[in-house]
Length: 412
Ligand code: PMP
Image 1 (tube, rainbow, N blue to C red):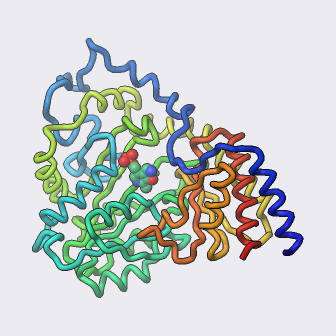
Image 2: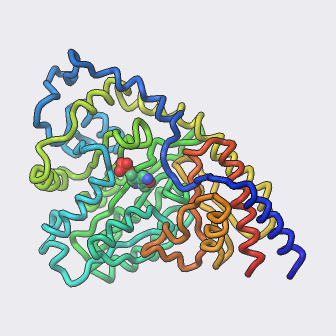
Image 3: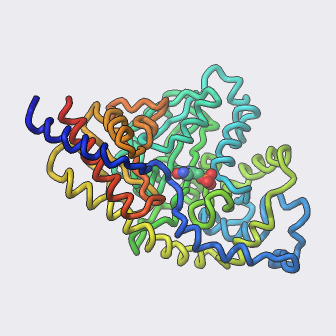
């Protein structure tokens, strides 16, 4: 056994003796972030619960949201009119899931048949990506095709070729800004190519999950080209469904979610929505509007989040650089926003790193989770979520992660 491996093993045994109990898996806001919006809970009272126009929010109705919240999300999701917005419940994942479910059961605008009646339905899945997008596909028996992520966003050379040839490819998932988990923001060229590309399926849809659109870590956030305008210009307006929510802005479990798209798409969605609900939680919408006031209010609120979480991201990067810099065992992203840092080990090490870390009391997202079918062909990607633990916990956890990366690499 090499002396390097021996000394790594010794350090690993020392780490084990510390009986750590740390968790870098949870992409959720820390309690300090949640505290920022607590005053919201006092803004609707038993004597004051009406919308800006004085409508009673206690009763049924308003399937697509209260007017001021629709205006708010019109700006948030960057569409041109309130008719192009539906405000939902607390979860954008719920809206995405339901969109896919209705496409499967009934087809979308322009479909000849419900997607489930076709022999095969396939989605393109830029990876590493968001595991719950992949779970939705798996749940409905949609075949997933992995597409590479480039530093500019999903690989459009691969995408254009695939969608042009195969009419069973009906959709693509894209987290366009500060992507989960790589932190990548799509370049203008990528957005424009996605809007313009020729698709064999006439009812192809882009699921544009802009979950982190306002989650900047630096002062000057990255700009993202407006897919809605680019689709309008390319005459493909029905191609895109846009999603977002305040989950990682107000309360992760009690935020407000919305979707946007062409009026035809929103009318289609509303038709289906009215089969499953008589309306969303309007009282929560009033609470949110009173707290943020408008979209500018929300943008300035996000600076407070950045102040809390940027030092956590910096700690992860600092430990990675100090422990692994120049060793050739891993690379990592340095995102300007979002909720994750993506760590890539050398090929064939990620599963082992997660296993080694777990045995020392440091929980990491399962290796492979960021790929369709949980299968990372290179077994190298690990998603790190620094927002929930304290800085001290992050430092301790990352020291263990770095040790495990070195050990897994040396074991090979
Ligand atoms: N999309 C992405 C890319 C996410 O990372 C998350 C949360 N992890 C969600 C959607 C979930 O959003 P919501 O809480 O609005 O359902």
